[in-house]
Image (tube, rainbow, N blue to C red; front, side, top):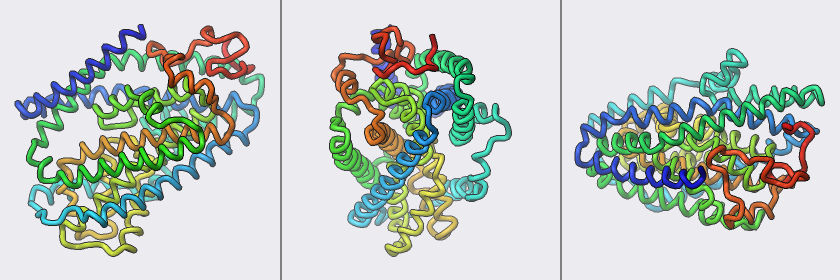
Length: 447
């Protein structure tokens, strides 16, 4: 079963190439194929809520002390804030040096597209965002597709089960079995990945065309290079210094997830697999179950770089450059406004337009300049955010003593392959004295 999944991801690569071909040769046909990509992403989003709920409840419910969870969550949030700030500074530096956008002109089509995006970005206020974290019911948190709502309900449930002590063991066992069921459903959905990738790529290439890519090549290349340098230099050095893990080995281990993100332009599609793979790597359930979902709502590495460079690009293109103080104030607002939408395709564009509408309305028309290539920039945002989440999970696990470096070495060396069929480790594959991740068996593990 594991061997067959290799052909699945080869099929994804072939589907992406075919999608590009169809988009260029028959653009009208390519645009009509968009529902294929939309449908595949919807299938993935269908299981996001239950997976987040199960992983967080199991992670919290299986530890004895609530302080352990608070420590993990606090470290994760602190780390994401610091790294988002670093990404913001890097984006500001690069954007001010290359001065993107000079010489471009605003068109009526671009202005209309910008107005539409501004309307999206201005819909929700900070108060609406905070109130939106609270679901209408416990069940709706798992069905409405909100990551933050599922996170809140899972935290409350996990702490409640922890307070119940041994009486909560049967419930935890039931949730663990349900988690296995959901992961099995996800593994089945993944076989539709080639179809989804084909439709998504064909649609975006058919709608954009080659001319838009040529006219805006400088901002795209600069953005991609900046993201690569941030991941390779900043995250790579930090990962090696703290955990003695080679970044490229880790990224290679997550290669299939990166391919999935590249084809769908959304890091949310790879969230369940990242949780499973981080646990398989040697990170404890508690750390993986808390850090990964938190990162999908608060990790803004790629988004910070995007918002920075896009803002400077628009200001330059419209002939209204921003003072340094204005840049910092506007971008900090955008970073706060984009919380909870890091894994959602197109959320960065709406945040950009909404932020400009609130602070510098005269610049909103410039958003239309990058509407055509936002999909391609969204891929870089998603890939950077995903890499940041993976590194953060290993770092938090190391800082809290919840990371098995010896097991990680075996996994990254290919000696302990990930089970692509179930996305979960089988306790029967490890010695009786150890759990699925090489940890001592917990009292609440299933029999």
